[in-house]
Image (cartoon, rainbow over all chains, first blue to last red; front, top):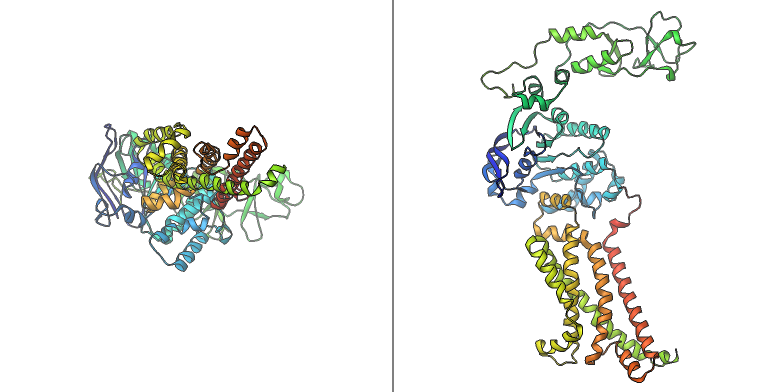
Length: 372
Length: 215
């Protein structure tokens, strides 16, 4: 657990970057610091490994005051990932990953084995080990950055906008992969971002900070969306928060209609409907076609692919999106294996949403606190 | 040409001495400039006085330096030690700024990452900053090498053994062959120094030569 206790950072010119910050980052969880530029989120992060020294207050790691530890020892026990990865350009990928194990004097063979295993885990095979960072794409460099941070198996990780410099598609992949990794590893992580969507996605809890280094609200993502504590947080959380809040609400039992389907390659001539769902041999949905516009068999070029597909036990947001995006207005719902279960109409999803309880009940004694 | 072939032995001997007088200070100067350049980066307020101050050394006329140094070192005026000291000073003058700027060319994201990994400042210097500064330092070293080869010949005036003696010989006798030979020998020596620095730089920076590098 990382605990900020009344931490302030004031520069000699009088600028206050962080104002009396008190915050707990629980063990094994991701705590996201999010806010506009100038809110002190990066400063707060860098005070944990003493890249910046606090002016007052203490930061403890599992009860130990970081201010009393030797800075280099402290840092070797904390994984650090930054924007643009910050890899050492003069070292191969493997040497980069081996940095901290070597600094702490881990055995050569153990270091090598661990580095290779980590590269594998972040999705870069042995082929990449001997390359230099300049030979990798931004996303690949960032993967190496994550592997390097994990190499000495530190219990704590600091991540400063780690996925901000890559394109949105790669960012999404990296986020998903990192969350999967974290499920296995259970590191205590402080994660800084300016992107509220990333904060909501990555955070077990989210600390919204405002300019001047004030903590505006600390809450679980769903709570934050449902109960922003003031106008600043409400603004910062942004539009669509009702819709986005559905991400955290599991779909209830929905009235699924069974759907007439045709298999790709068969004829849809005898279907008496404006739209029919096309599936493959395993009953996995592929898309919709309009039978009246097709002579003969259904080919993959004729498919309308606009509809998204929701898992039956997934979040409500996905179900609603499936219904809204489907050209037939019938949202496709599948089971965990991806096989068709049935379809649902938008008004049925909305009814389900209305009937569902509010996800988190307001706690009047302590507004803004995580409901858990 | 005949003159050259007749004096091959002289060219070889004086060339070797010239190489030592110009080359050894290059190495010594680099070793002295490294910590000075590091200091100029580490303490920003030192940068201006250091680069300007050491740069000024270069403006001291070499002739004056060759004449004054024996008084300072207490060695005989013909002692090559004086030339080594003078040339080392010139090398330091050129390289302090180069080293400081070379270290400054290392991206701050990289030095920050190194610090955050738990490098102590000393280890970080040798493991990260110095290797990355090699291309810039090497460029400065090439300038210093050529400059050294050229300035050493001024030692002729105080009679130190090196290629410059061909110039005074040719001048005194109004006979141009030795002058041409001396110039060509100096150019060849400078080219050899340059080539050595280039090769060493390439060996020290394998990451700059990888294929398929992406932006």
